Image (cartoon, rainbow, N blue to C red; front, side, top):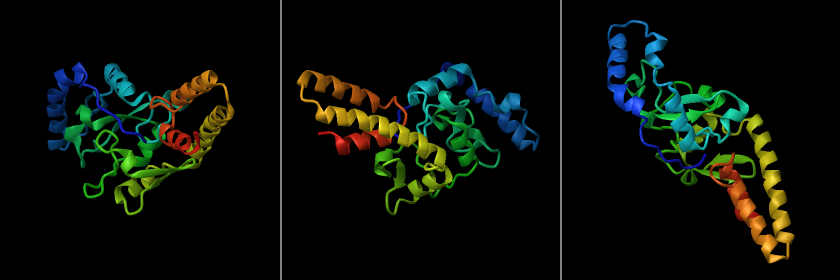
Length: 215
């Protein structure tokens, strides 16, 4: 997980969110079933494209490139369930791009007293530590620990692909450290910096590896 910045709100939300919210809340106040055509109006192409841009097409939690593994989900950071925060269903600040697994693991759980780490508000560097392919909550950080456990940031399939990524980066660093030609060495360094950039998968752990290994 890395720190992210919100884009400007997509025009389709600016123009319609108040009317959409009023209609949605009307169903809830009347105790009626909410049609998906009403509750899912946030699922617009321009909304999803904006979310892709601000998260580099990666899941905001696990940093997987979502399109490489599955369909993208629009995640509600505070759950939109009718008994949670339905009034935030169409609020752009409450939306993020997520992989299906992280989205389903998080589900409709949310504790105001111990909220999950929100990469648009919190700097994950202040809450997690990367140890190899593992992402661990810092000691005593209840919010980070809850995020790690509930969303399963160290689930086996993630560890496998992270290790593959780390091995690839490690090979590059070893070549860089052994190179004596300064021009080639600089080119290798540029390549390493590109490969651990924020737009690349699992940049939180790969950047920590490079910090430890780069001479």
